[in-house]
Image (tube, rainbow, N blue to C red):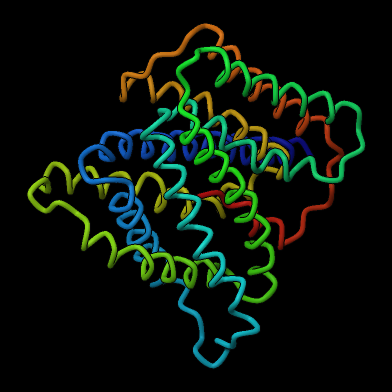
Length: 299
């Protein structure tokens, strides 16, 4: 019994540490994207990210042609559109607001979805705390760009829609076939535009290398590790670790992008993360289904 308990503990520790690693990878990739947006624009950055996602997923999860009917495919097709909207609006907001602020506002989406239908007083208190944290982050400096906030809120709503659609896709398409189709749709929508608007004179090996690095760190690594992680830790722990993503994003914003935050803004970011973490940690654990395991991947 002790050996089995020790083995479970080791698996959980490995899973949790790997999940922390994916959060670092995603936000490091977003920080690199922040460096690239002034050079090539967010459309090009997102297009390269989607191409890399498709390359990483398609060889292993190719859908069967005989099963590609409209009834089964429409959620995956819509998911591709949501991916484009989510990533474009997020990176545009990063270009305007900075990574730390944009990532914190974007996190409102999945948090609001997690609280939908909840009647717990604690959840209401946590929701109010998150709203207060966002106000401290955006409403106290007097320099926040309204368009940037709206774009970050669009990314937040798109992230929530991504989670809902992923659940629907999981019912119709096995494994990651839905993500494969969504990635193709997103690539088809973005790549032609990116090829038209990109300033080729600004492309050199350094920029190309950073574009590939951003795509790998933000998409290929997290997608490939999510299944490994979710087999080793419960959904609640996964969500708790994810709730501290804005703190990691803020750290990379400071270290890589040279962003500056007032003490009040830093308090606002911490309030958002802690309120979300408390709400998730105290929620009643539900039995984990295969559907939920598939739906819990985050772009």
